[in-house]
Length: 208
Image 1 (cartoon, rainbow, N blue to C red):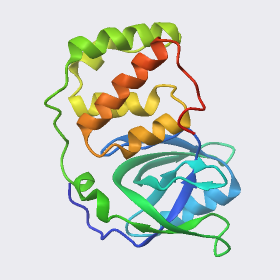
Image 2 (cartoon, rainbow, N blue to C red):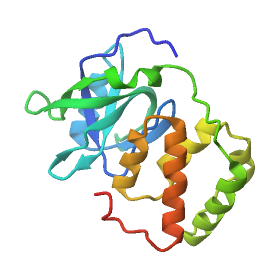
Image 3 (cartoon, rainbow, N blue to C red):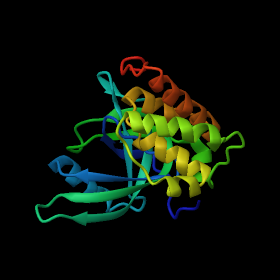
C-alpha cells in the first residue's frame, strides 16, 4: 500500500465510543456537530486527509486508535456530511492537544504499526467450519442478519476485520480487537468473544 504523503506527527481526532477502524478496512461516518464539520473542512485541505478514529476511555482516550483517509464525502440538504474513511495505519496516542481548534488534535506515534501500511495479512489458522456455526448462533441470538454467501466468499482479513467492526461487542472488546497485533490474534480473540457471549457471559464491564 503506497501513499503520496508521509504520515504526519499530528492529526485530528474523532473520538467515538464503540467505533473502531481495522487495518485496510473502511468505515462510514455521519458528521453533523459543528466542530467536526470544521475538522472535516480542515482535513480536506491537507495532503494526507487523515482523521484519527479513537474511542473514549475513562476520563480520557484509548491508548491506540486508527487513522483513516477521507476517500468519499457527500453533503445532505441540511448541511450534514456522510464520509468514508479508509484505514491507513493504527497509531499510539502520545498527547491530545486542546484549545488550538474546536476539535482535538493529537501528537501520535506510528512506529509500532508498520505492518498496517502493507498488503492484506494471511491467517493460516483460519477455520471457517468452526467459526461460521458459532457466528450463526451468535447472530440469531442477537437478531442480526448477514449475507452468508458474501461472507463465505470474503477474504480472511476482510471477513475478520468486518466482523470485529460491526458485531455489537462492548467498547472494551472492540478496543482489544483493534489492538490485536496480528490477524490471527484478532481472529482468535473474535472467536473467543463470540463463544463467551454464547455461554451467557456477555458482561459489558469485563474489559472496561
